[in-house]
Image 1: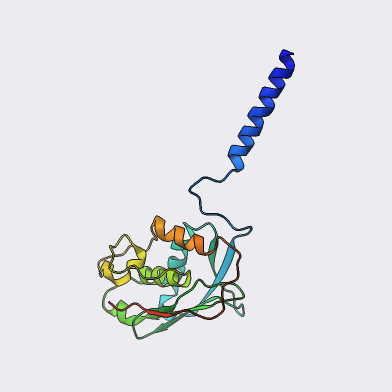
Image 2: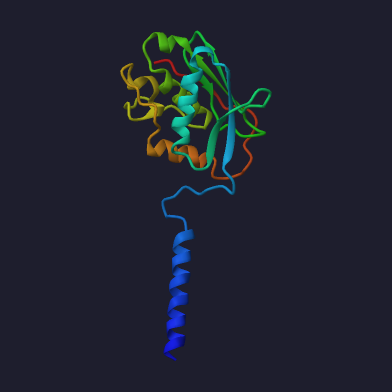
Length: 187
């Protein structure tokens, strides 16, 4: 009898341990069956290519449901980055494989005024992930954009911004292929 009781206790303890190990945390963002990969093409980003890579890495460090990966030559990209002379602007996402695409216009005007290139890249990629501007806002908010000021070099999305981006990719539901808006990030 003691043997059966001990066996039941061990079975219950093992079941609880496995349940605790695989049960998601109450505050966790739901994960899709597979992480969504968005490819970005920075071949037209000119002098800003390294800033784009750093901005993508900034997002990748904190996201669970989506990953930004540089497209290889000839590969279709969901996000295209183009350097140009105006203010940064982006078509609002969320970009999706086989669906909505986003174009980031990496504006030299903001760089000429002293804004940090990696922050610009990460901010504009945030729009491609479906995040709107959060203006006015502090430097600690990546999506505050230019209202963080030219001295702001923070290129890391905060917890709320990461959670919002992950939520946009928590469901494999189809997203319409048309773009919602073009967001111009002038002050």
